[in-house]
Image (cartoon, rainbow, N blue to C red; front, side, top):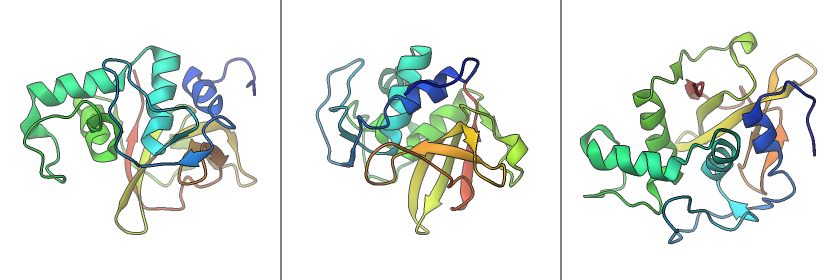
Length: 175
């Protein structure tokens, strides 16, 4: 599926996963390093972002998050009880990506103003009151002019009108 010219390269890279990533699978998988990935047919919300940034900007979040966590482990969440980094999973966890994005200076204010969200922005939220989730803002808007998002919340990569459905916890723009 191609997008109009001038659309964010991140949006194009995310959209290219629709129809290829067809399932949601949070299983722990041993990955090659660097540039490791699970099979394109499956993944979680973070995999959509990881693949999009890798394809669009040549940013390998697996390597970057792993190296930053190794150098600054105390700055990262201690949710999982880990004593050291794990290059297979650290970059696939939303709270770690939030920390990395903040450390890179990519954070923007969270708002409820649709005009604040540009194509290619990354947005985090909490689903069902406790589950961290990440989405990529699309260049397509719903009938109310609210940007749609590209994400995998179950059933594979999709473009949907869900930007403000869940409480937002972060807003990031890749420099």
